[in-house]
Amino acid sequence: MDAMSNIKAGNGFWSEQEGPDSIPSPYRVFSANDWAKFRADTPLTLTNDEVVRLRSSGDPISLDEVRDIYLSLSRLLSSHVEASQQLFEQRQQFLNISPDKTPFVIGIAGSVAVGKSTTARILKELMARWPSSPKVDLVTTDGFLLPNKTLLENNLMEKKGFPESYNVSEVLNFLSRIKAGEAGVEAPLYSHFNYDVMPDQFQIVDRPDILIFEGINVLQSRDLPEEGNAVPFVSDFFDFSIYIDAEENIIEKWYVDRFMRLRETAFLDPGSFFHRYSKINEADALEIAQGLWNRTNLANLRENILPTRPRADLILKKGVDHSVEQVALRKL
Image (cartoon, rainbow, N blue to C red; front, side):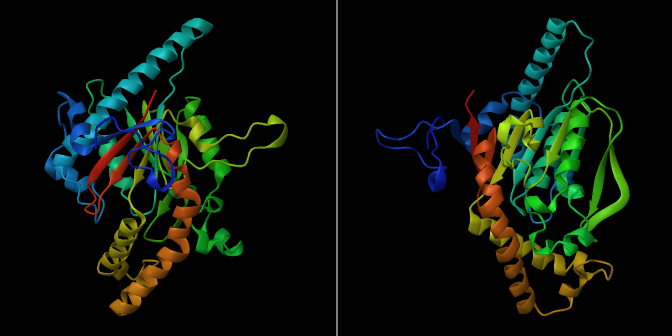
């Protein structure tokens, strides 16, 4: 595929357009090899040991892929941050007011098990090592989920991760305070071990230069009100957004494989919410994993997550081995 090929919406999102009636795409698509050229002379500041530490279980990202894909992305983000800072300073001069520090916010979206956390952690480390040494914080939306008790009371446990399972007003309040430049903003914490929000435990976000906000539904839109009343979207607070993409059947395999691996590791701890799954035979565990995927995660992907893909500024398309094969960048 040519580096500047267009993409079209729908099932052919990553296909080249053909024919006189094709609609121009807002994206440019690059192969991994073409995208790697954009890193130019950007230095690689991570070691192989650091990459191994940062990657999630089952996500075999390599140092070579960090060099080829994420260094180019880091360079692109650096230019966006610099341009945003210049515009901010010009706006302050125009208004003749004292500047307040406003973080550059990056949203990262995509399905469960697609590798959002690895991408977020790698980018955080790369950006924090820019020559300007910016302060970079990472917050996930898991902490903004409603507590299990509330989900159970409202029959939402089967829809955990769906938009209605989050405290959206709390998310919007958090991002509003971040964008207002407030110091010491609290973000609630989540325990995957307990599979629940951790009561009275918080991450303190103290006026970073850059905030990465990662979660499956961060690009989700909402119904618009009548009479033009203000209803902010989470993505309204983003300066740049990234969607991690892969074919549905590939993500399903990653999810099921991860579930089966966890049976042999984290689920073995008696205190784990999912400890019961470590005690059943492999065939039954496989059936349960498949059921969880079909009932919850696949439905969420189709209904809520995938439809937000065209709202991203940049899309990373992964292949079966988890490596990024194509990159789509929104045209300016």
